[in-house]
Length: 83
Image (cartoon, rainbow, N blue to C red; front, side, top):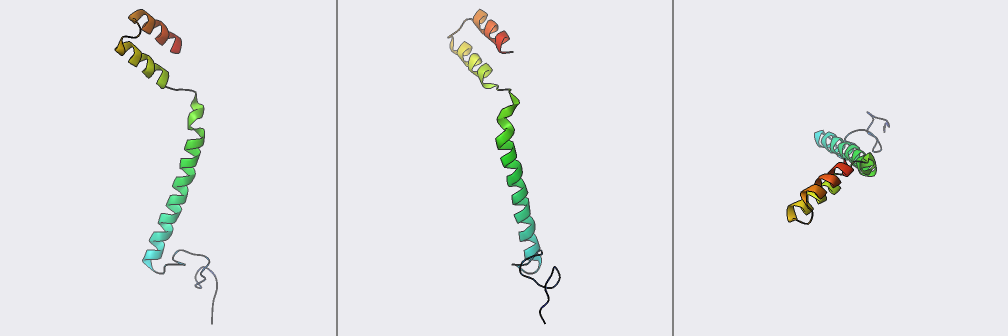
């Protein structure tokens, strides 16, 4: 007699459905961990640039000052404008 359901050996549901035994549990947990990780990664990627804080202009300003392209007074003025 063939039983269906979570404990009945259906191939459509349940941990270990495709890989029986402890290996099936491990593969199922790894699969769902990967799915959850991808959801958070996509969320972070989509909304990461929305914070409005971009440290790169200040880094660029520091590099220009270090190379001698701008004077100390210009550096201070531009830094205060960026802040």
